[in-house]
Image (cartoon, rainbow, N blue to C red; front, top):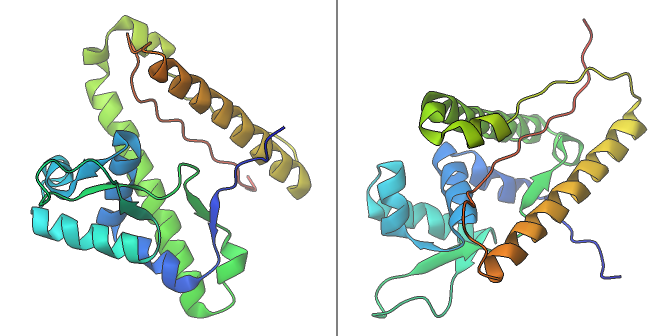
Length: 197
């Protein structure tokens, strides 16, 4: 059995600061979905100047989140980018919240991620009629209220990550085999957190 893939866990505050800019979160997500893209292609999607997008991509590259996609350039001038790791990145607030600055940065990035995900879901809701019955019937949004302890929540998180990886690999294998008919990017957002009513 091959080793379980690991998400790039950020424990260095200076690396996490790279994502305090909401545009960088958006660019990373778009690049992850596209596989590779140029700054100009991404600039069109975020309605920003290519030079600004290029600057932010270089900043993400400095921290190891994106890298140049070799072999894509056709004229030697255009620079193609890709995410550095297909497993993405994550962080634990406890690794960074030992100082007021660490807690503030972790909170800013977590809120930025939630805002980005919520904006993506709102965009889907605004356009859902255009997707047609097949997709609107397949799409889902659910909330479960569970009574768990912290260890159980951690176990649930691992199981959900394993399940998501399995489905990601299934989609990649299908695309590699030429099975692209009806395939779209699908975003799955899952949260698990304690609350008291």
